[in-house]
Length: 170
Image: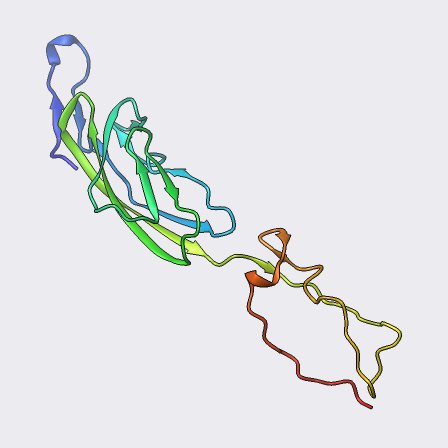
């Protein structure tokens, strides 16, 4: 942020205007689902002279080193999360400068939290003739009706563990 700037043009008949935050880059905290990471703009909450920043009224630069998980498009302010990004917290720092006065700049940090994919495991009811307590048997797959990120689950997507070791009495 900059020191206050005063428009002392009293001879123009209008009031004097004091700008204390000519440009304000505001840090962002974004939670992104690993199911379908959506691009987002870092400019949404930034202002120039109290007005919403647009790619046309600022110059955007990335201050922090590039990381493979996050890409900042400096022509639009849009951050893209790379496919396959692991669950975790990632940050990048950017700077915006007033396009009309490149010495008026501010920086902010974007913190992206990648969340776990949503597994929707459905209960199964296997009442199949021919499976009994003496000779056993085989059921159909327990993941047939389960979903990962709203799509059919495949066994290579998950790790199985026995939660309820109860057996059928008999």
